Image (tube, rainbow, N blue to C red; front, side, top):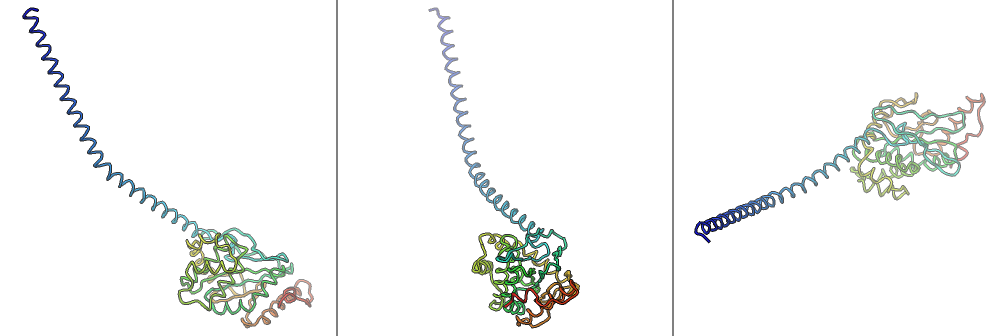
Length: 312
């Protein structure tokens, strides 16, 4: 090999070694850069994951709160199903007592009075009652057995209007509970109303809490699995307040006009003003109203008023 050729080979080897060193240097720099990026990702990523987790929790809580708010808005927007008149109508077929279905009252709407046909021989009995009212409890204790008998037999209908005239928290929740029953278990309205009303004398100033109301209703056979969510969320508390205010402003009975005391009892639109504790006096009043209606229809008095014949 000539000297010049040897020199060329030596320069080539040196160039290859220099290139290899440069490539190794670049590889080291790339590996170091990757390690730095990994540390940055790990250092930032863990806090971001924690933030994402917290954000997820916050979004879940907000979502649930929004759902609850929407439910409250819906509840405030309409009253209970089967209470288009702000009351629930109960009727019988001779063997059982059940609710007469209606739509719910819309937000801002006026209650729709129940249509009755007094020429049919079936009396319409209407009761406005506050679950805090001792007088209402006295009246119910005296007459509820007769009322249940007449309605079940198909001799009368009973329209229950629960009110919270004092506006205290328990009274509103109790009326709201009655709305829950009307909305989801309407055929239990009679026993639910009876339980809420007759519990009145034993209540303290705070009344029953939600669990207490649920237990009370369950104890008389109301299927509380159907009303518990409604009770817990107070779906019809706003409606209870509004229905009470509407009754205090106007009711569709010429001889009453407004309801600001409890109880107010009407038979075929005629108010009962007798002794609230005297079942016989009330039965006599019902009989008289029936006789008067029969006389108006036929021009002659009727000897045997239907409800009186089934009373006692």
